[in-house]
Image 1: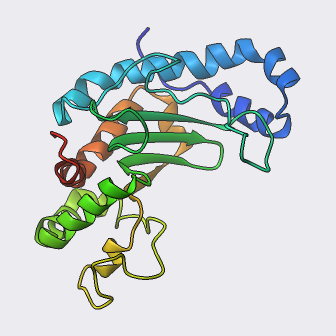
Image 2 (image 1 turned 135 degrees about the horizontal axis):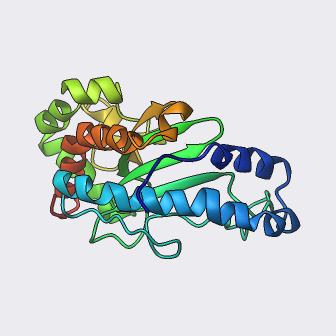
Image 3 (image 1 turned 135 degrees about the vertical axis):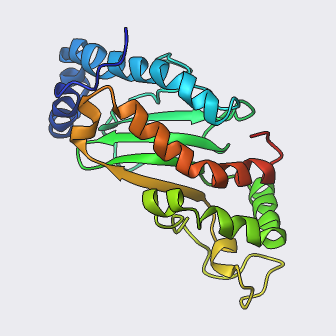
Length: 230
């Protein structure tokens, strides 16, 4: 089916799940989850695939509940003090074709009751990948800064995220390096806010694509840094 917008029960479901985060409640409301969460998410993923391919053909929009662009609702509670079983938001990731997990460059949409975020980047990459990104920022700082100076980037994001920075400079770099704030980052991503009302119409696809396009120069930089085509 064509994407017609997220239904209002999309957010109502997560509000109620937040107050009733138990397996019994979820199983009783699973038909709502399938109809008002899963189905519109898959429709959205399918709708965004063609315009996303125009930005870059190397990012995947896979309309599957398992193994596709929609994150599972089940939380990994093995090492967490919080044992609630379900996430209270929906996450959609359009990862790079060379990436097998969230540590590869990807575009992202986050839909929750308190915030709606659109953007992309790379989240906590492993040490060798992180070292390559820092090396490219060091050697191509002009390109890195130029990507953040475009009108589109400034309009959508303002600046890159703080990126969970190190307290001290990474090995091989001095504290007086002109790019030290970026070199200290352990994640590199940019996020734009949207309004809940934006999600209720088919035009939400266009809004998301426009934000992805504003992120494209920085995504291209990150892809080059990790030896992935853009």
